[in-house]
Image (cartoon, rainbow, N blue to C red):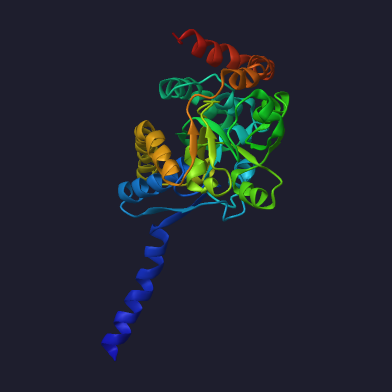
Length: 327
């Protein structure tokens, strides 16, 4: 009995120390685990656990299961409802104009373009997050955005028949300008509107669409290469500062590794997505009518000019530098 009491006492003394030694961060995304942001959050959690020897654990959640959409992510992190999170950059435009840059239409047309724009924009995105009391962890690249629809799009007139889900203010304006009925809603809220018929098209990559099985409702995909957008992963700066130096180093290293691996994954992601889409009966139009592209591109110059008015410094130092480097 005496030995049992000693062992019990030792366990009680040890438990609080163990609990205090392990820190857990909640890190949600509104996207499926199979989409690029879901892959990013999962990869980041694995690297943090390994590099911190289990002293810091990331608890990811997907499909907005915490009730937090991209547009509300920075507020949720600032209020410490969650410690970290992933958000679609374009949905954060109201927080700072820099977040709209990766979604400017027909600016980025290749993975190489997307990587170069990300590198140019990184310090400005980090500064915008710093102003919100947050720290940039990593940027998540997306495959090219296209149009999911019920029937193939053959002419610009077909755009006027679309009630399309877009993903930010700029894309809503671009599609509305081309004659579509456009609404900007989070991906997490898209499926119910497909079910009830209030939308009949979706602007998204094959990646997010494949993850959510859009082909059940929209069996056609037009590869318009609207843009290759980005998502942003961040953490509450005070939460990060509260870590030991060793754990901060682990987070920084995990962030770098995660972003590197996401860019590598993107290089084969498009082919993998298309293979899965075709296996589920999706008709992929890799060469949409030039007139359809032109109808959407007509608003692109105005969108870029409007963005420059809102963000003079970033326009000069990021967008101008990006365009100067294009062949």
